[in-house]
Image (cartoon, rainbow, N blue to C red; front, side, top):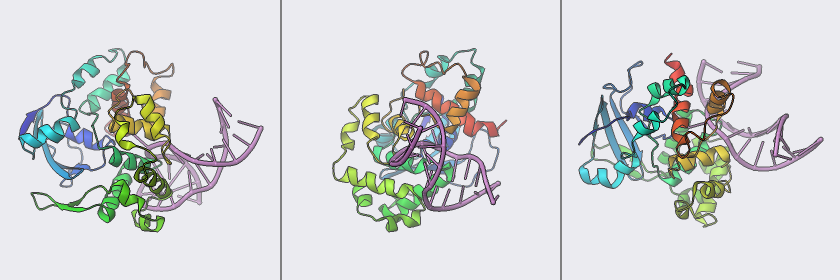
Amino acid sequence: MYRRARNFDIGQISRSGQCFRLNPVEKQEKGQADGQANGEYRLIVGEKTLYLRQGGDEIWLSCGEEEWEKIWRSYFDWDTDYGAFQDAVDPEDAYMQAAIRTGGGIRILRQPLWETLVSFIISQQNNIPRIKGCVESLCTLFGEERIDSRGYVYHTFPDAGRLAALSLEDLAPCRLGYRSRYILATARMAAQGEIDLEALGDLSYEEARRELMRLPGVGKKVADCICLFALHHIEAFPVDTHIQAMLREHYPDGFPFDRYKGFAGVLQQYGFYYESFGRRLR
DNA sequence: TGACAGGTACATG
DNA sequence: CATGTACCTGTC
Protein backbone atom coordinates (compact mmCIF):
# COMPACT_ATOMS: atom_id res chain seq x y z
CA MET A 1 0.00 0.00 0.00
CA TYR A 2 1.01 3.61 -0.50
CA ARG A 3 0.79 6.58 1.79
CA ARG A 4 1.75 10.19 1.36
CA ALA A 5 3.67 11.73 4.19
CA ARG A 6 5.05 15.05 5.26
CA ASN A 7 7.99 15.34 7.61
CA PHE A 8 8.63 11.65 7.30
CA ASP A 9 11.91 10.17 6.12
CA ILE A 10 12.49 6.49 6.58
CA GLY A 11 16.26 6.81 6.11
CA GLN A 12 16.50 9.49 8.78
CA ILE A 13 14.38 7.43 11.15
CA SER A 14 16.59 4.39 10.58
CA ARG A 15 19.70 6.43 11.40
CA SER A 16 18.15 8.34 14.28
CA GLY A 17 19.29 5.87 16.91
CA GLN A 18 15.88 5.44 18.52
CA CYS A 19 15.26 2.05 16.93
CA PHE A 20 17.79 -0.65 16.12
CA ARG A 21 15.91 -3.09 13.90
CA LEU A 22 15.12 -0.77 10.99
CA ASN A 23 17.79 -1.12 8.35
CA PRO A 24 18.39 -1.00 4.60
CA VAL A 25 17.67 -4.34 2.97
CA GLU A 26 20.49 -3.94 0.49
CA LYS A 27 23.72 -2.25 1.24
CA GLN A 28 23.25 1.35 0.22
CA GLU A 29 25.41 3.59 -1.87
CA LYS A 30 27.05 6.28 0.18
CA GLY A 31 25.89 9.83 -0.21
CA GLN A 32 22.35 9.18 -1.31
CA ALA A 33 20.24 12.14 -0.42
CA ASP A 34 17.54 11.94 2.18
CA GLY A 35 14.02 11.75 0.92
CA GLN A 36 15.04 10.39 -2.45
CA ALA A 37 14.60 6.88 -3.77
CA ASN A 38 16.99 5.49 -1.24
CA GLY A 39 16.28 1.80 -1.44
CA GLU A 40 14.25 -0.52 0.66
CA TYR A 41 14.20 -0.81 4.44
CA ARG A 42 13.15 -3.66 6.67
CA LEU A 43 11.72 -3.13 10.13
CA ILE A 44 11.26 -5.87 12.71
CA VAL A 45 8.91 -5.19 15.61
CA GLY A 46 7.31 -7.77 17.87
CA GLU A 47 6.11 -10.61 15.67
CA LYS A 48 6.14 -8.61 12.45
CA THR A 49 8.38 -7.46 9.68
CA LEU A 50 7.55 -4.45 7.52
CA TYR A 51 9.26 -3.37 4.31
CA LEU A 52 9.29 0.27 3.28
CA ARG A 53 10.40 2.35 0.32
CA GLN A 54 10.26 6.06 -0.09
CA GLY A 55 10.41 8.39 -3.06
CA GLY A 56 9.95 12.00 -2.04
CA ASP A 57 6.82 12.17 0.07
CA GLU A 58 5.41 8.93 -1.25
CA ILE A 59 5.89 5.92 0.98
CA TRP A 60 5.35 2.32 -0.03
CA LEU A 61 4.70 -0.18 2.75
CA SER A 62 4.51 -3.95 2.45
CA CYS A 63 1.47 -4.26 4.73
CA GLY A 64 -2.24 -4.11 3.97
CA GLU A 65 -4.79 -1.65 5.31
CA GLU A 66 -5.80 -3.75 8.26
CA GLU A 67 -2.27 -4.21 9.59
CA TRP A 68 -1.50 -0.59 8.90
CA GLU A 69 -4.40 0.52 11.06
CA LYS A 70 -3.74 -2.04 13.75
CA ILE A 71 0.00 -1.66 14.14
CA TRP A 72 1.99 0.73 12.00
CA ARG A 73 -0.09 3.87 11.94
CA SER A 74 0.39 4.29 15.64
CA TYR A 75 3.96 2.96 15.59
CA PHE A 76 5.09 5.74 13.24
CA ASP A 77 3.07 8.36 15.11
CA TRP A 78 1.44 8.96 11.76
CA ASP A 79 -1.31 11.34 12.81
CA THR A 80 0.91 13.80 14.62
CA ASP A 81 1.73 17.01 12.77
CA TYR A 82 5.49 17.36 13.02
CA GLY A 83 5.31 20.49 10.89
CA ALA A 84 3.65 22.16 13.86
CA PHE A 85 6.59 21.29 16.11
CA GLN A 86 8.98 22.64 13.53
CA ASP A 87 6.99 25.83 13.05
CA ALA A 88 7.22 26.45 16.78
CA VAL A 89 11.00 26.65 16.62
CA ASP A 90 12.45 30.12 17.05
CA PRO A 91 13.20 31.50 13.54
CA GLU A 92 16.28 33.14 15.07
CA ASP A 93 17.59 29.79 16.27
CA ALA A 94 19.86 29.09 13.31
CA TYR A 95 21.20 25.93 14.87
CA MET A 96 17.84 24.21 15.39
CA GLN A 97 16.63 25.41 12.00
CA ALA A 98 19.64 23.74 10.40
CA ALA A 99 19.01 20.60 12.44
CA ILE A 100 15.45 20.51 11.11
CA ARG A 101 16.63 20.88 7.52
CA THR A 102 18.84 17.83 8.11
CA GLY A 103 16.55 15.62 10.18
CA GLY A 104 13.06 17.04 9.79
CA GLY A 105 11.76 13.66 8.67
CA ILE A 106 12.36 12.00 12.00
CA ARG A 107 9.36 10.70 13.94
CA ILE A 108 9.16 9.76 17.57
CA LEU A 109 8.14 6.13 17.31
CA ARG A 110 5.86 4.21 19.68
CA GLN A 111 7.97 1.13 20.26
CA PRO A 112 7.25 -1.91 22.43
CA LEU A 113 8.38 -1.27 25.98
CA TRP A 114 10.43 -4.37 26.70
CA GLU A 115 12.45 -4.26 23.49
CA THR A 116 13.13 -0.59 23.99
CA LEU A 117 14.11 -1.06 27.63
CA VAL A 118 16.67 -3.78 26.91
CA SER A 119 17.99 -2.07 23.79
CA PHE A 120 18.71 1.14 25.66
CA ILE A 121 20.41 -0.66 28.51
CA ILE A 122 22.67 -2.05 25.78
CA SER A 123 23.11 1.42 24.29
CA GLN A 124 25.11 2.89 27.19
CA GLN A 125 28.76 3.62 26.37
CA ASN A 126 28.17 1.99 23.02
CA ASN A 127 27.81 2.99 19.38
CA ILE A 128 24.85 2.46 17.11
CA PRO A 129 26.31 -0.18 14.74
CA ARG A 130 27.45 -2.24 17.72
CA ILE A 131 24.14 -1.79 19.54
CA LYS A 132 22.40 -3.13 16.44
CA GLY A 133 24.74 -6.10 16.40
CA CYS A 134 24.14 -6.83 20.08
CA VAL A 135 20.36 -6.64 19.68
CA GLU A 136 20.43 -8.92 16.64
CA SER A 137 22.55 -11.53 18.36
CA LEU A 138 20.29 -11.40 21.40
CA CYS A 139 17.30 -12.05 19.13
CA THR A 140 19.04 -14.70 17.05
CA LEU A 141 20.17 -16.65 20.09
CA PHE A 142 17.17 -16.27 22.36
CA GLY A 143 14.23 -15.02 20.30
CA GLU A 144 11.82 -17.23 18.42
CA GLU A 145 12.38 -17.96 14.77
CA ARG A 146 9.82 -16.63 12.32
CA ILE A 147 9.52 -16.46 8.57
CA ASP A 148 7.73 -13.66 6.77
CA SER A 149 5.75 -13.68 3.52
CA ARG A 150 8.93 -13.07 1.54
CA GLY A 151 10.62 -16.10 3.05
CA TYR A 152 12.91 -13.95 5.18
CA VAL A 153 13.92 -15.71 8.38
CA TYR A 154 14.10 -13.49 11.46
CA HIS A 155 13.86 -13.74 15.22
CA THR A 156 11.54 -12.06 17.68
CA PHE A 157 12.93 -10.10 20.59
CA PRO A 158 13.23 -12.47 23.58
CA ASP A 159 10.72 -11.67 26.31
CA ALA A 160 11.56 -11.04 29.96
CA GLY A 161 10.84 -14.59 31.04
CA ARG A 162 13.22 -15.99 28.48
CA LEU A 163 16.05 -13.65 29.41
CA ALA A 164 15.41 -14.08 33.13
CA ALA A 165 16.13 -17.79 32.79
CA LEU A 166 19.59 -17.21 31.30
CA SER A 167 22.99 -17.01 32.94
CA LEU A 168 25.81 -14.55 32.31
CA GLU A 169 27.55 -17.36 30.49
CA ASP A 170 24.57 -17.80 28.18
CA LEU A 171 24.72 -14.11 27.29
CA ALA A 172 28.47 -14.04 26.68
CA PRO A 173 28.21 -14.67 22.90
CA CYS A 174 26.18 -11.48 22.55
CA ARG A 175 29.24 -9.48 23.63
CA LEU A 176 27.19 -7.16 25.83
CA GLY A 177 30.08 -6.66 28.22
CA TYR A 178 29.22 -5.37 31.68
CA ARG A 179 25.65 -4.68 30.48
CA SER A 180 24.88 -8.41 30.66
CA ARG A 181 24.35 -8.36 34.41
CA TYR A 182 22.06 -5.33 34.11
CA ILE A 183 19.93 -7.14 31.56
CA LEU A 184 19.67 -10.31 33.59
CA ALA A 185 18.79 -8.40 36.75
CA THR A 186 16.24 -6.27 34.93
CA ALA A 187 14.71 -9.31 33.23
CA ARG A 188 14.40 -11.05 36.57
CA MET A 189 12.68 -8.09 38.15
CA ALA A 190 10.23 -7.95 35.26
CA ALA A 191 9.63 -11.69 35.22
CA GLN A 192 9.05 -11.86 38.98
CA GLY A 193 6.70 -8.92 38.97
CA GLU A 194 9.01 -6.73 41.04
CA ILE A 195 8.19 -4.07 38.50
CA ASP A 196 4.93 -3.92 36.58
CA LEU A 197 5.89 -2.93 33.07
CA GLU A 198 2.29 -3.23 31.87
CA ALA A 199 1.24 -0.54 34.31
CA LEU A 200 3.95 1.87 33.18
CA GLY A 201 1.86 3.05 30.28
CA ASP A 202 -0.69 4.59 32.63
CA LEU A 203 1.83 6.67 34.54
CA SER A 204 2.83 10.26 33.95
CA TYR A 205 6.27 10.99 32.52
CA GLU A 206 7.76 11.73 35.93
CA GLU A 207 6.23 8.64 37.52
CA ALA A 208 7.26 6.35 34.69
CA ARG A 209 10.78 7.74 34.72
CA ARG A 210 11.15 7.24 38.44
CA GLU A 211 9.79 3.71 38.19
CA LEU A 212 12.14 2.80 35.32
CA MET A 213 15.13 4.04 37.28
CA ARG A 214 14.54 1.30 39.86
CA LEU A 215 15.85 -1.12 37.25
CA PRO A 216 19.55 -1.95 37.30
CA GLY A 217 21.33 -0.36 34.35
CA VAL A 218 18.65 2.28 33.95
CA GLY A 219 19.72 5.77 34.96
CA LYS A 220 18.35 9.15 33.96
CA LYS A 221 19.40 9.04 30.35
CA VAL A 222 18.21 5.52 29.57
CA ALA A 223 14.94 6.11 31.46
CA ASP A 224 14.33 9.23 29.38
CA CYS A 225 14.99 7.32 26.16
CA ILE A 226 12.43 4.71 27.17
CA CYS A 227 9.92 7.38 28.14
CA LEU A 228 10.44 9.07 24.79
CA PHE A 229 10.76 6.15 22.36
CA ALA A 230 8.39 3.62 23.93
CA LEU A 231 5.96 5.42 26.23
CA HIS A 232 5.77 8.44 23.92
CA HIS A 233 6.28 11.06 26.57
CA ILE A 234 7.57 13.56 24.04
CA GLU A 235 8.44 16.01 26.78
CA ALA A 236 11.29 13.68 27.83
CA PHE A 237 14.68 15.12 26.87
CA PRO A 238 17.48 12.55 27.14
CA VAL A 239 20.85 14.21 27.69
CA ASP A 240 23.77 12.20 26.33
CA THR A 241 27.22 13.24 25.17
CA HIS A 242 25.94 14.64 21.86
CA ILE A 243 23.18 16.65 23.48
CA GLN A 244 25.60 17.83 26.14
CA ALA A 245 27.86 19.12 23.37
CA MET A 246 24.89 20.78 21.67
CA LEU A 247 23.83 22.51 24.88
CA ARG A 248 27.37 23.64 25.59
CA GLU A 249 28.11 24.94 22.11
CA HIS A 250 24.78 26.34 21.00
CA TYR A 251 22.73 27.02 24.13
CA PRO A 252 25.22 28.40 26.67
CA ASP A 253 22.41 30.35 28.38
CA GLY A 254 20.20 27.29 28.64
CA PHE A 255 17.90 25.45 26.28
CA PRO A 256 14.52 27.20 25.85
CA PHE A 257 12.42 24.48 27.48
CA ASP A 258 9.66 26.96 28.23
CA ARG A 259 9.13 27.71 24.58
CA TYR A 260 8.93 24.00 23.73
CA LYS A 261 6.96 22.86 26.74
CA GLY A 262 5.49 19.40 26.20
CA PHE A 263 7.51 18.41 23.12
CA ALA A 264 11.17 19.16 23.84
CA GLY A 265 11.93 15.50 23.10
CA VAL A 266 11.17 16.05 19.41
CA LEU A 267 13.80 18.77 19.30
CA GLN A 268 16.16 16.54 21.20
CA GLN A 269 15.93 14.09 18.32
CA TYR A 270 16.59 16.78 15.72
CA GLY A 271 19.57 17.92 17.76
CA PHE A 272 20.89 14.43 18.33
CA TYR A 273 20.63 13.53 14.65
CA TYR A 274 22.33 16.75 13.62
CA GLU A 275 25.14 16.30 16.11
CA SER A 276 25.76 12.61 15.48
CA PHE A 277 24.99 12.15 11.80
CA GLY A 278 24.36 15.56 10.28
CA ARG A 279 27.79 16.93 10.93
CA ARG A 280 29.24 14.30 8.61
CA LEU A 281 27.16 15.80 5.81
CA ARG A 282 28.80 19.19 6.11
C1' DT B 1 48.43 3.19 22.67
C1' DG B 2 44.64 5.35 24.23
C1' DA B 3 40.30 7.61 23.65
C1' DC B 4 35.77 7.12 22.68
C1' DA B 5 31.07 5.18 21.96
C1' DG B 6 23.44 8.00 22.88
C1' DG B 7 25.95 5.93 31.01
C1' DT B 8 25.36 3.69 35.46
C1' DA B 9 26.53 2.33 40.07
C1' DC B 10 29.12 3.07 43.80
C1' DA B 11 32.54 5.44 46.57
C1' DT B 12 34.11 9.54 48.53
C1' DG B 13 34.37 14.67 50.37
C1' DC C 1 24.61 17.09 46.64
C1' DA C 2 28.89 17.11 43.55
C1' DT C 3 32.69 14.99 41.69
C1' DG C 4 35.57 10.80 40.46
C1' DT C 5 36.18 6.15 38.73
C1' DA C 6 35.62 1.31 37.13
C1' DC C 7 33.35 -1.10 33.75
C1' DC C 8 33.02 -4.99 28.61
C1' DT C 9 33.92 -4.57 23.91
C1' DG C 10 35.29 -2.94 19.31
C1' DT C 11 37.23 0.45 16.34
C1' DC C 12 40.14 4.03 14.71
